[in-house]
Structure formats: C-alpha cells, structure tokens
Image (cartoon, rainbow, N blue to C red):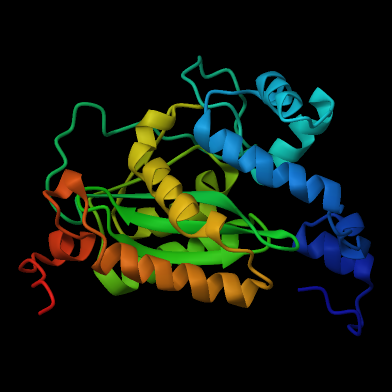
Length: 275
C-alpha cells in the first residue's frame, strides 16, 4: 500500500490513504512466551465460561496458579477479540460511521439451506504465536461454506471469506454477524447490500444470537486445535482445512438426525457403512 520508493513522501501517501503515519513506521513486536501461555488458558476458559469478564477470568487464572492483574487480562482479551457474552443494553458506541443493523432471526423458523448464513472470527493458538479463523456457516445445515486464516483481524480477510462463499454457493436471504467492526464497515456490508442480502446483527454481547457458530468453535477447538501445536500458519491452514473437510463430509450431527452437514446442505443420501 505504501511505496517507499514513490516520488510522494510517506507522510503525503499516508494522508492520501487516510491512515496513521505512525502505523507506517510501526514494527510489530512478538508476543512474550508468558503472554502466549496465558492467551491459551484464556481461550479455553472463555470457551467454557463465555459469560466470564476480566475480573472472573483473573480469578479463574489465579485458581490455576497464574497470578495476573485485571488490566493485563483485559489487554489480552482485546488482543484475542473476546469479551464477556451476556445480554445488556446497547450502550456501547459503534465504530464511527458504521451502521448497526437489527437482529432479524428472533422467532424465525430456519429450515432450508441458504436461508440464513452466519459469520464469526475466533482466536487460534499455535506453538509460537496465534492466528484468527473466520468462517461462513449455513445456519440450517451447519455446513462451513468458506473459511480463512489471518494473522490480524482486519476486515479484508472477512470480505474475502464472504466473497468466496458467495462465489461458491450463491447467496442467502439473510446474513447474520456480531457487531464487530470487521462486519459493520462499508467494505463488508456493501458486499451484502450489492447482492440484495438482508443484514442481521446480534445484540451486543448476546452469544445465543449466533449460537451455531459458537458450537462450531467448540467442535473445532476440542476436536482439532487443542490436540495440535501448529508450527506455522501454513501447517495450521492445512490441518484446520483437513478437519473442516471431515466436519462437513464425515461428522454426523444429532441435530441433523445424524446426517453430515454435506448431506443436509446438498440433500445427499446417507453414507453407506464400509464393508
């Protein structure tokens, strides 16, 4: 984006692109090993106790012998992109210029593929460092339609994941997300609007509004991520991709009458048992 060899000065390029000049010169620092260990613990605790805020998480860590201040816990939670999940009044200000759309799924009967899609991002620990995983999920059939890994939570990789799902599977009637800035910005909502897709957003902190994605995170982490120690982003991408192929094509769901997501989405016959 910034061309250091260009005739325009870096300051002027930053002004034209409307980005902070400081971000151009910033050199990212690696996360200390001690913090990486705490991030992994926080990820497990958040999955088990999604209602826990920084105060409770600090107490839970203390019970595990990990002494840490509440402010440090809050800092690490922001880095992971997690917060305590519970219903509360909409008092949090949205990102400037970002529109918050109403939740459209309350009381709706969702019974067919491509009626409602949902999307979310989660933190994925590795042996050294971490990445973020974004998925687009078909609500009725639980099928993962598209996914991407990224080292940051920028909106661009969410837009790419969305566009890939649309290119592969058509479009849904409704698309549901949380109120994260990646999903409320024009780059993301513009794609939905251009395709005539109704936009639905969870209530602030209301995890039950997107419960099927939360269940997917539990499956991915306990059946894949926590059993591995990825050495690199490419290894994480390969291993998670292999798991999601299994999840879509071979893993039966009791909520789907023991069908796989592929069977439910494509209306396929049951898999025959191997001889």
